[in-house]
Image (cartoon, rainbow over all chains, first blue to last red; front, side):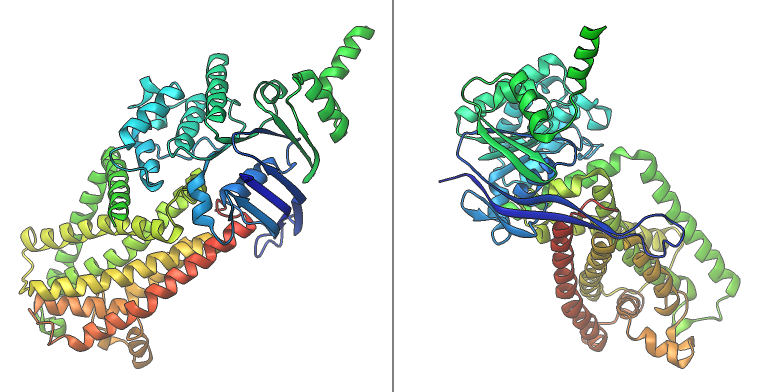
Length: 267
Length: 266
């Protein structure tokens, strides 16, 4: 059975100007986040979601996690519909969001993880063990008892991943997981993701990093202005450069790096 | 059931640790209690012993009125602040992706917020009686019954404020409106019988009026549950109507926020 199924999903955000906004320039409007997007992933697959800013990557992750509901179409996780069986969907999904401040600042990393693990119904006996495990996996053992208000961006990001992992989800959603990480932490995270995939965890990874997508993913979904413009396997050893070319070709964006290279060569 | 208790324990622990790690906040709250009590004590002395609203001394009358009022408003405010902070930091979105149903999460969080206000009420009343010598004649069982029914209503009002916050990002306005209107109309500082007739009728439509009335009867006059049956029945009726309404409204507003992507809008 497919683990995640998107069927003709539409998602649009309406903007309304503030009430009594007589002097402002704000006008009402709408943003199409996703338009008729369909795909299905199988167990243990690592799927990279690529696309420019505003292409719908984060909306895709939020729809799977039930933070958002689709306007049309359906989202199913493990056979459960995100509208009708939101609770059952949430039990299977762990999400590491890009917002790194989504913790309780006056609790330590361990206390935060214990809090979220309790809400995720991890049993009392198992919690200390799992927390230790995810602290090790994310390299936060030494900061486990530090209040998170003292954390750096990278440490927040690692803690976000630890929080997503502590419930041992069947589906792991990662929104730019290495954005604030140093090289060593990035390598450690990649190894964690590979090991999760070997244990049949499906991973959806929204990223702007072609090297990361090439190193980890066995499938690529490319979004552009809310539409799925490519859905292809990456099992034949595509390089970061291959993904880069495909990305700029399909999105029509200007490749600044290539332009610089050409300008350098010409001069 | 075990899981729910476990979750309640986690929420209480989170809020307790956060509160004690804000050490100065703790001290300021305590100082605030004593300052307020001192102001009411000297106000009642200035007015003199001749003024005995509902047949009781004015300071105990004020002590119960302001204590119960503060409990209601502080509870709604504390709960609202929890929701607002969770929106601002993005924690609300993450909390909504845990295996805990949103309604369960909200109720458990509000219990914790109310725990703080209840502690504050206890400190306020005990300080009023021990430090400022307020004369009481308490019926403990009646006090507990009034408190339990008041809790249900305060919980509902807190959830309604949170609903306004999630749906329209205007929870603070609702608490402000509630706070300023209730202060005047619920008999906090003077008996509602002193109000002009239309306002006196309006005050009878406010649950806080009955909560204050009930607590004064139980704590200052030692009235039994059967003696206060009409007041308690009205309080229970408010609770039965308000709680399901508040939960339904919150559930709708959360669903709407998920649909429109406004869970973290503030």
